[in-house]
Amino acid sequence: MRIAMLDLPYTSVIAGNEIRWGKSGQGPALVAIHGTPFSSQVWRRIVPHLIDHRTVYYFDLAGYGQSEMRAGQDVSLAVQNKILAALFREWGLDRPDVLAHDFGGATALRGYYLNGLRYGSLTIFDAVALAPWGSPFVQHVRQHEDAFSGMPDYMHRALLRAYLQTAAHKPLSDEAFDVYSAPWLGATGQSAFYRQIAQMDQAYTDEIEGAYAVMECPVTVLWGTQDAWIPFETGQKLAGLISDRDCIGIPDAGHLVQEDRPEAIVAAVLKNSLP
Image (spheres, one colour):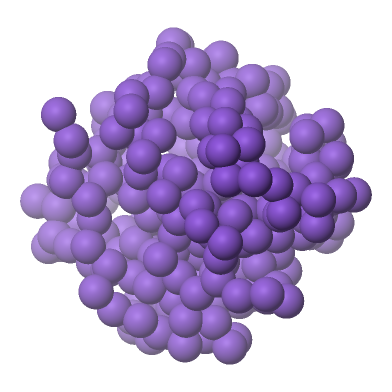
């Protein structure tokens, strides 16, 4: 059964990038920030369970999903927190709840420590936040971006499918593969996929790691205990730095908790943002 896709009917031009976004629901604001190599559609199994309690804002990071993709574009972590801060201003949000995954976690943390953004609560999971990060595959692509961008389509599709599966502990459905692969296909999408990998740089988390301290809002750190990209121990360390609560391990979940255990995210958001 196919899960309904999230609608992103709005476009905002921020830092020279067309950013697609949407919102749904009623109640206090919650901003959901996706990671790589995903899009806001990673929340399609989460948002329907929150809209009776929250107005959920979701968007595609620059260079991802339905947002603009173009040659020479800066899609690094250096720009994503600036876009987040601009969206907060455009949406008129003051201390919304925030839900963040992977690069979205880094973006939320950079927004807090560099841009002065403040949150009503933060639910962060399997986040890119502490050194070291960046797999051997990432390092290889960074050295050979042009070669990967020019691969035949069938090879790119096979590599993309294999890469996506390593994010999940359970086998991904064909529907999930289709959703997460779609933005990265075709000449524009394929180039954009390797562009965002080539711009992954640990310097952007090193920049804020020394500033980590317990945040001025309730912080829940979740982590898939079977995360093959960023180990559970990293989540425990992060929780010790930014939260007054221990990291919560999610059994039978890998890096892509949204597919492996979506109910754990819904429960954590609602519990973390209780008044």
